[in-house]
Amino acid sequence: MPVEVSIEALRFADGSNIPVPPDGALVVVGPNSSGKSSLLREIGALLVNPPAQNQFILNDIDLKKDGLAEDAVEWFRQNVSGETFLRNQSELGFKNSSGEVSVSGVQAQWPYSQRLAGLAQFFVAHQYAESRLQLLQESSLHDQLNDLPGDPIQFLYCYPELEEKLRGWVKEAFGLEVSLNRYGMSMGLRIGKLSRELPPPPPPREILQEYASMRSITTEGDGVRAFVGLLLHIMLTPTKITIIDEPEAFLHPPQARRLGQLLLQSAPAGSQLVIATHSRDFLQGILEAKDRPVKIVRLEKRSGAFIPSTVEPGRIQQTWADPLMRYSDLLSGLFHEGAVVCEGDADCRFYQAVMDTGIRGASGSRDLLFTHVGGKARLGKAMRQLRDFHVKSATVADFDILNDVKVLKSAVEGAGGDWTHFEADFKSISSAIDGMGMTIPTVDSIRSTISAILSGLSGKAPLPNKAAEGIRSSVGFKSPWQQIKLGGIAALPSPAAVAAKRLLTNLGDIGIFVVPVGELERWIPLEVGKQGWLVEVLEDGHYLTPPPALVDFLRRISSYFGSALPS
Image (cartoon, rainbow, N blue to C red):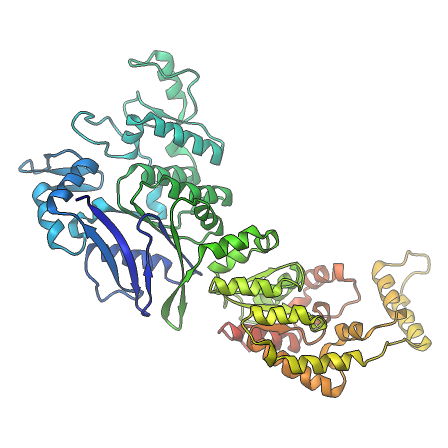
């Protein structure tokens, strides 16, 4: 009977049981301090021993451990080493870079323990960020007749085709050539490529000189070392389960994505990867390796409890396939406590700036992603997709979202609301606005406005853009919705204003926050066009002293996510 070792399921403390693919990857995502790394440590501990009292996230795991004692001994012969005398020289056993165990130790531990116990180091590998930088240490020749390769460098020496595959990956990811120096006092990877085919031993002096002129890969930056070391370990080390924390550490986004693709492709058949990541690029890469199953679990911490949710990979791929949603950065919501979806980039930057620095004591109190979808039309779709990711989300829209029933209804349904609960107030407001007439400025009002704009300007100087914009605005007729955009609720007739306040309150309860003063620029009115408004607000520091109405508005958003802004 072949030896089988795999995690079948995770049993979480909240009562959730989540299956783990037997021949694929479990990928854990979530915001900072949500327990991702702690979960990996608990999994590692439960593979060795039964549950202990110092566990907070998992109650236990379901571990599959099949095969008889003699099967386990044969697995060690095939995957660890040939039988050899151990350091005490008194009995035969198996040893490699992970450690050593006697034949009798395998026979005793395998059938009588429900866990892996003292054999875990041979079946399970732990790859943390700092340890990955040590995976490329140089090696020496081993006894190829009687022993198995004991480290990745020895594997590369025995299998030149693997070296060729690795060379292609590193060239693609970093633009570097790598070669295995087979003829030094010790073997190791070098940066460079030989100018000729490698001849059979003994090597000519010219080859030795070429190798000597190449620098060791251990002198490269952390990104190259981490990328190559992790790939070599996954591809060449016969562990059944590999636990990896933050595989994207030290890597730029393109390399993180490529690593995600290669890890799953290069992992031996029948092995499992258990990964915690904080990178949307790595996550996307691993989802592009379509030959192996992937389970995605989003972990978050609520009121001191760790809550897991399963995210369907197909939902993520669907978002990635939509160009507008992809470049709206919705996938990054998986790694935040919540997401605030705005109409445009200016909205995101303004609200985030005020929330971070314009309100005393608020900076750093929330882990919210601010992103936009290029207008109102896709706000509902964005909220629906974030709900599929189990990410709490809100949307901020100007008052004129009430000017399009289709867009508003889509946002309500995307937020999980029932449109019928909002329809009556919406109709009441729409009817009142339709009954408002055009606003026609009087001659006196135009004269007064223009006089104020031109006051202090030189008669021979060109008219500034800001002044021109103000004059154009003063002489124009204003439709009802133009009036509403400038005044918000205050521009509505009294009965409709009451309905609007009620509607905006109810929308906020499901995460839709409508600007009550009309539009973004009305929070801090300036005599400047829309294009220059945000620049002036930020550069002149207007956002540092937000008006009380804006502070109240942002407090409601923050409270919706469960963290109140300071008073």
